[in-house]
Image (tube, rainbow, N blue to C red):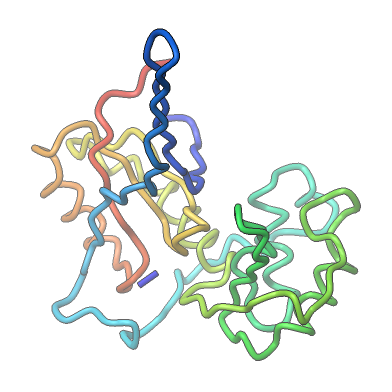
Length: 214
Protein backbone atom coordinates (compact mmCIF):
# COMPACT_ATOMS: atom_id res chain seq x y z
CA UNK A 1 0.00 0.00 0.00
CA UNK A 2 1.13 2.50 -1.59
CA UNK A 3 3.69 20.86 12.96
CA UNK A 4 2.01 23.50 13.96
CA UNK A 5 2.70 24.68 10.42
CA UNK A 6 1.38 22.70 7.48
CA UNK A 7 3.96 20.49 5.84
CA UNK A 8 3.81 18.75 2.49
CA UNK A 9 5.88 15.62 2.19
CA UNK A 10 7.55 15.30 -1.18
CA UNK A 11 9.52 12.45 -2.74
CA UNK A 12 13.23 12.76 -1.97
CA UNK A 13 16.28 11.35 -3.63
CA UNK A 14 19.29 11.49 -1.36
CA UNK A 15 22.48 12.04 -3.31
CA UNK A 16 25.80 11.46 -1.58
CA UNK A 17 28.86 13.14 -3.07
CA UNK A 18 32.36 13.65 -1.75
CA UNK A 19 35.68 14.63 -3.24
CA UNK A 20 39.20 13.91 -2.03
CA UNK A 21 42.17 16.24 -2.24
CA UNK A 22 44.36 16.28 -5.30
CA UNK A 23 43.27 14.43 -8.42
CA UNK A 24 41.25 11.68 -6.75
CA UNK A 25 37.47 12.13 -6.80
CA UNK A 26 34.90 9.90 -5.15
CA UNK A 27 31.34 9.89 -6.42
CA UNK A 28 29.26 7.36 -4.47
CA UNK A 29 26.11 6.10 -6.21
CA UNK A 30 22.84 7.88 -5.60
CA UNK A 31 20.82 6.10 -2.94
CA UNK A 32 17.01 6.03 -3.03
CA UNK A 33 15.17 7.69 -0.19
CA UNK A 34 14.54 5.14 2.56
CA UNK A 35 11.01 5.23 3.90
CA UNK A 36 11.22 5.20 7.70
CA UNK A 37 7.53 5.78 8.31
CA UNK A 38 5.38 3.12 9.96
CA UNK A 39 2.03 2.25 8.41
CA UNK A 40 -0.83 2.43 10.92
CA UNK A 41 -3.14 -0.59 10.85
CA UNK A 42 -6.38 0.25 12.69
CA UNK A 43 -7.55 -3.35 12.35
CA UNK A 44 -5.75 -6.65 12.07
CA UNK A 45 -4.94 -7.92 8.63
CA UNK A 46 -4.96 -4.65 6.68
CA UNK A 47 -4.54 -5.32 2.95
CA UNK A 48 -4.99 -3.48 -0.33
CA UNK A 49 -8.56 -4.80 -0.41
CA UNK A 50 -9.49 -3.55 3.07
CA UNK A 51 -12.60 -1.32 3.11
CA UNK A 52 -12.20 2.27 1.98
CA UNK A 53 -14.34 4.97 3.56
CA UNK A 54 -14.29 8.74 4.10
CA UNK A 55 -15.07 11.18 6.91
CA UNK A 56 -18.73 12.09 7.29
CA UNK A 57 -17.91 15.67 6.32
CA UNK A 58 -15.88 16.10 3.14
CA UNK A 59 -13.96 19.39 3.15
CA UNK A 60 -13.56 19.13 -0.62
CA UNK A 61 -17.33 19.65 -0.96
CA UNK A 62 -16.77 23.30 -0.02
CA UNK A 63 -14.16 24.06 -2.69
CA UNK A 64 -14.82 26.11 -5.79
CA UNK A 65 -12.61 26.64 -8.80
CA UNK A 66 -11.98 30.27 -7.81
CA UNK A 67 -11.11 29.75 -4.15
CA UNK A 68 -9.13 26.55 -4.76
CA UNK A 69 -6.52 28.45 -6.77
CA UNK A 70 -5.30 30.13 -3.60
CA UNK A 71 -3.69 26.94 -2.25
CA UNK A 72 -2.08 24.07 -4.13
CA UNK A 73 -3.68 21.38 -1.93
CA UNK A 74 -7.13 22.86 -2.42
CA UNK A 75 -6.59 23.11 -6.18
CA UNK A 76 -5.52 19.46 -6.31
CA UNK A 77 -8.55 18.37 -4.28
CA UNK A 78 -10.88 20.42 -6.49
CA UNK A 79 -9.37 18.84 -9.61
CA UNK A 80 -9.62 15.33 -8.17
CA UNK A 81 -13.38 15.76 -7.71
CA UNK A 82 -13.71 16.51 -11.44
CA UNK A 83 -11.10 14.41 -13.21
CA UNK A 84 -12.33 10.98 -14.39
CA UNK A 85 -10.61 7.95 -12.93
CA UNK A 86 -9.95 9.27 -9.43
CA UNK A 87 -6.89 11.46 -9.94
CA UNK A 88 -4.22 11.10 -7.22
CA UNK A 89 -1.02 12.59 -8.66
CA UNK A 90 0.75 13.41 -11.91
CA UNK A 91 1.61 13.39 -14.72
CA UNK A 92 5.07 13.32 -13.16
CA UNK A 93 8.37 12.95 -15.01
CA UNK A 94 11.20 11.10 -13.25
CA UNK A 95 14.93 11.30 -13.84
CA UNK A 96 14.68 8.80 -16.69
CA UNK A 97 12.06 10.92 -18.49
CA UNK A 98 9.30 8.43 -17.73
CA UNK A 99 5.92 10.09 -17.30
CA UNK A 100 3.56 8.57 -14.73
CA UNK A 101 -0.02 9.29 -13.70
CA UNK A 102 -1.68 7.80 -10.60
CA UNK A 103 -5.40 7.08 -10.75
CA UNK A 104 -7.93 5.06 -8.79
CA UNK A 105 -8.94 3.61 -12.17
CA UNK A 106 -5.94 3.58 -14.55
CA UNK A 107 -8.18 2.58 -17.47
CA UNK A 108 -9.44 6.19 -17.44
CA UNK A 109 -5.99 7.53 -18.37
CA UNK A 110 -6.96 9.32 -21.58
CA UNK A 111 -10.05 10.92 -20.07
CA UNK A 112 -8.05 12.01 -17.03
CA UNK A 113 -5.30 13.63 -19.10
CA UNK A 114 -7.86 15.42 -21.21
CA UNK A 115 -9.66 16.75 -18.13
CA UNK A 116 -6.42 17.88 -16.50
CA UNK A 117 -5.39 19.72 -19.66
CA UNK A 118 -8.71 21.60 -19.74
CA UNK A 119 -9.29 22.21 -16.02
CA UNK A 120 -5.85 22.96 -14.61
CA UNK A 121 -4.68 26.60 -14.74
CA UNK A 122 -2.07 27.46 -17.39
CA UNK A 123 1.62 27.12 -16.57
CA UNK A 124 0.94 24.36 -14.05
CA UNK A 125 2.39 20.82 -14.13
CA UNK A 126 -0.53 19.48 -16.15
CA UNK A 127 0.69 20.44 -19.60
CA UNK A 128 -0.70 18.63 -22.60
CA UNK A 129 1.18 15.46 -23.34
CA UNK A 130 0.93 12.43 -25.59
CA UNK A 131 -1.33 9.95 -23.75
CA UNK A 132 0.55 6.95 -25.14
CA UNK A 133 3.75 8.15 -23.45
CA UNK A 134 2.11 8.24 -20.00
CA UNK A 135 2.01 5.16 -17.75
CA UNK A 136 -1.06 5.10 -15.51
CA UNK A 137 -0.64 3.32 -12.16
CA UNK A 138 -3.31 2.41 -9.60
CA UNK A 139 -3.79 4.46 -6.43
CA UNK A 140 -5.82 3.52 -3.35
CA UNK A 141 -6.96 7.11 -2.74
CA UNK A 142 -7.62 10.02 -5.04
CA UNK A 143 -6.24 13.38 -3.94
CA UNK A 144 -9.62 14.72 -2.78
CA UNK A 145 -10.01 11.74 -0.47
CA UNK A 146 -6.57 12.33 1.03
CA UNK A 147 -7.43 16.03 1.42
CA UNK A 148 -10.71 15.23 3.17
CA UNK A 149 -9.01 12.93 5.67
CA UNK A 150 -6.18 15.43 6.20
CA UNK A 151 -8.60 18.26 6.96
CA UNK A 152 -10.63 16.05 9.29
CA UNK A 153 -7.56 14.97 11.25
CA UNK A 154 -6.14 18.49 11.40
CA UNK A 155 -9.42 19.62 12.92
CA UNK A 156 -9.05 16.99 15.64
CA UNK A 157 -5.44 17.79 16.56
CA UNK A 158 -6.59 19.59 19.69
CA UNK A 159 -7.14 16.16 21.22
CA UNK A 160 -3.71 14.87 20.24
CA UNK A 161 -1.90 16.06 23.37
CA UNK A 162 0.81 13.70 24.47
CA UNK A 163 1.40 12.32 20.98
CA UNK A 164 4.38 14.55 20.22
CA UNK A 165 3.01 15.27 16.73
CA UNK A 166 4.93 18.10 15.06
CA UNK A 167 4.50 17.51 11.33
CA UNK A 168 1.79 16.37 8.93
CA UNK A 169 1.11 16.38 5.22
CA UNK A 170 -0.14 14.56 2.14
CA UNK A 171 2.55 12.32 0.67
CA UNK A 172 1.52 12.14 -2.99
CA UNK A 173 4.43 9.90 -3.99
CA UNK A 174 3.20 7.14 -1.68
CA UNK A 175 -0.52 7.97 -1.83
CA UNK A 176 -0.95 8.50 1.90
CA UNK A 177 -0.99 10.96 4.78
CA UNK A 178 2.15 11.19 6.93
CA UNK A 179 2.45 12.42 10.50
CA UNK A 180 5.75 13.14 12.22
CA UNK A 181 6.37 12.75 15.93
CA UNK A 182 9.31 13.96 17.97
CA UNK A 183 10.33 10.73 19.73
CA UNK A 184 9.52 7.03 19.52
CA UNK A 185 8.28 7.12 23.13
CA UNK A 186 5.02 8.75 22.00
CA UNK A 187 4.42 6.39 19.07
CA UNK A 188 1.91 4.28 21.03
CA UNK A 189 -0.04 7.41 22.00
CA UNK A 190 -0.03 8.60 18.38
CA UNK A 191 -1.31 5.26 17.11
CA UNK A 192 -4.03 5.23 19.75
CA UNK A 193 -5.13 8.74 18.77
CA UNK A 194 -5.27 7.89 15.07
CA UNK A 195 -7.17 4.64 15.59
CA UNK A 196 -9.57 6.54 17.84
CA UNK A 197 -10.34 8.87 14.94
CA UNK A 198 -11.65 5.89 12.96
CA UNK A 199 -9.12 5.88 10.15
CA UNK A 200 -9.24 3.16 7.45
CA UNK A 201 -6.41 0.85 6.45
CA UNK A 202 -3.77 2.05 4.01
CA UNK A 203 -4.15 5.74 4.77
CA UNK A 204 -1.73 6.89 7.49
CA UNK A 205 1.96 6.44 8.20
CA UNK A 206 3.89 7.87 11.17
CA UNK A 207 7.59 8.71 11.27
CA UNK A 208 9.85 9.74 14.14
CA UNK A 209 11.34 12.99 12.82
CA UNK A 210 12.85 14.53 15.96
CA UNK A 211 12.29 18.12 17.03
CA UNK A 212 11.30 20.63 14.37
CA UNK A 213 13.38 23.80 14.44
CA UNK A 214 12.22 27.02 12.85
